[in-house]
Image 1 (cartoon, rainbow, N blue to C red):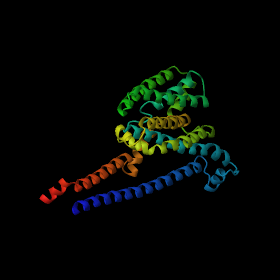
Image 2 (cartoon, helix red, strand yellow; image 1 turned 30 degrees about the vertical axis):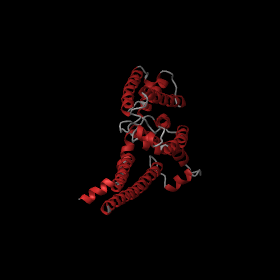
Image 3 (cartoon, helix red, strand yellow; image 1 turned 90 degrees about the vertical axis):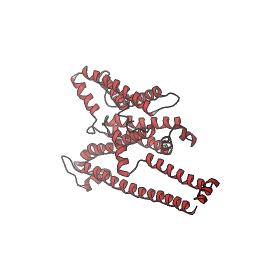
Image 4 (cartoon, one colour; image 1 turned 135 degrees about the vertical axis):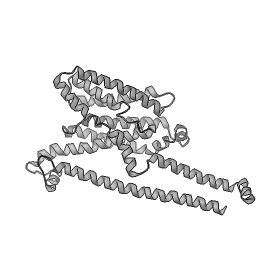
Length: 326
C-alpha cells in the first residue's frame, strides 16, 4: 500500500514539475517572440528608401510634426506595419481555432474554402461589377461568412465531423477556385492587374481606412474566441466527452466558426488572402512553445485518471488481498 501511494505521489509530482517547466518555457518564448515583433515593427518604421531615426519615428507616432516624416512614416509605413501585425493575429487566431475545433491540422480557412470564397467574391466585384476599395472588402467579408455557413450546413448530420467538413470544404474550395480562374480569363487588362494584386495579397496599399476595421474586428471577436478556449479544449476530447463535462458542443462550434471566419474575412478584405499564414501559424507556435494544448490536456487527463485508478484499486479489498498473497 505504501509503495503504491509513493508511486502515485511521484507521478503527481512529475506532472506538476512538467507543468511548471512548460509554463516557464511558454512565458520565455512569448517574451522573446513579443520582443522580435516589436523590433520588426520599429524597424519597418525606420528603414526604407529613406531612413528615419527612432526619435523622429516616436515623435510621429505621438502625433508631433516632423518635416518629411509625417507623410512617409505616418501615412505609409505606420498603417502597413499595424495592418501586418493585426492581420497576422487574425489569421493565426482563425487558423488555430479551426484546427483545434476539428482536431485536424488541415482544417485551415485557406484549405477548406473560406479564403477561396472571399477571393472569388472579390474577383467578381472587381471584374463584373467594377467595384473597388470598400465595395470589394464588403463582398469578401460577406462571401467568407456565407461560404463558412454553407460548409457547416452541408457537413451537419446530427453533428459536425471534422473529416466530413474538411472534405466538403476542399471540394467547395476547388469549385470556387475554378470560378476565380474563369473570371480572370475573361477580365480586361486593367481589371486583371487589380484582381491579381488583391488575390496575391499585399500590404503595400495599406491605409488607415482599411486597417481600422480589422482592428475593431480583432477587439470584438478576439475576446469571444478567448472565452471559448476552455470549451474548445474540451471539444478536442470528443463530442460525447465534452457534453458529459457540460459543454454545449454545437453552440461552441457556432460561436467559434462565426468569430474565426469574421477575423479571417476582415483580414483578407484588408490584406488579401496571404497564403498559408492561418495554416502554418498554429503548428509553428505549438512546436516552438512545446506540446499543443490538446496533447497536454489529454496527457494530464490520462495522468490524473491513472493516479485516481491506482488510488481506488489500492483501496479495494481484492487489491489488498492480492498484495497480501504476494
